[in-house]
Every structure is written in structure tokens, then in C-alpha cells.
Image (cartoon, rainbow, N blue to C red; front, side, top):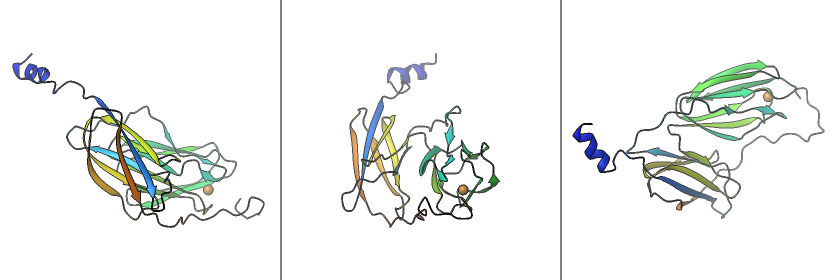
Length: 212
Ligand SMILES: [Cu+2]
């Protein structure tokens, strides 16, 4: 071994960095918990590990809804769009991060795409207006989505990161620098302003429409 490398090893610089855990709590103006907020940590000093090839990312169509309202994947990941319904669906996105269209396709089929540009991809279906979902493509494997308590837990190596916080109803993402210590109780709390929920309300279940 070259002396330079041994020195680095002795100094611990090449040893695996200890894991850290960060809990981000997201609240809205009136103290309500915010679910479906996206927290991503982009390493500032360390290289970004590539996406796990075996990970299966899926946004299905079921009961004429997208199964997940907000989905996060690392840039370079493949996402499948299986139709698990008994009716045909269409998928489109006009977003800069990925413009695409899957023409009407039958139950049982699953189209897939690779999403390699970071950004927000808004998904719709031109048959069912109320179907909307967000795919957030981030340049890092370290991310989490807040739960019903407004809590998102991200595990990452200790170190310095650019933290990005986003929600479909926020006007813009919040970005800040954060340093994670090698311990499980790193914490950060955000209070955000949410725009009104613009989702198209689905008609009452009993009501018939030509497209159902
Ligand atoms: Cu549809």
C-alpha cells in the first residue's frame, strides 16, 4: 500500500462515515401537520451514490386514482405505471423534468420510463380529470416523505448537505444547508405556507359519467 493511502486510512478519512438520522417536522401556518412533504439531502462534500438498480418504483392506477399522491425517486431511476383497474387510463406530463405521454392503455399493462432529470413531474390522465400525482426526481438517494404527523425521517451518512423541502401546495421549495452529526436525533422543524388544495374533487360515487 502506498504511504499516502495508509496515512488517509490511519486518519480515518477512508473509513465508512457513521450514519446519521434526521427527523424533519413540517407544519403549516396554523400548526397543522403537513403530510406528503418531500425532504431531500444532497451531499455537499461526499460523492452521491447511484440509484439502487433493483429498487422497483411504481405509481399504479387503481380505483381511478393514482395509488400514490407524492412519490420520490433518485434521478436515473425507472418508474412503472401499472394499470390495475378494469378501465383504460392515459398518463401525461407537461413538466420540464419529463414531458411524456402514455396513450390510453389497457388494464394489466405497465409502461415504464427512466427519470434522469431532477425536478417535479406532475402526472395527469386526460380521461379522469381528478387523477393527479407528483413524481419528485431528486439528485440523491437520501430522501423521505412526511407522514400524517408531518414527520419525515432521512437516514444518511453524517456530513454536510443541501436540504430541500417541497410540497405540492408550496409556492417554491425551501433550500438550506444542514450538517448532520453522527447520531439518530438530528432535528429540524419547518413551518410552511400552503396554497389551497386545487385538486379536482371526484363526483359522488353513485353519479354516472360517460368516462367511468
Ligand atoms: Cu385515468
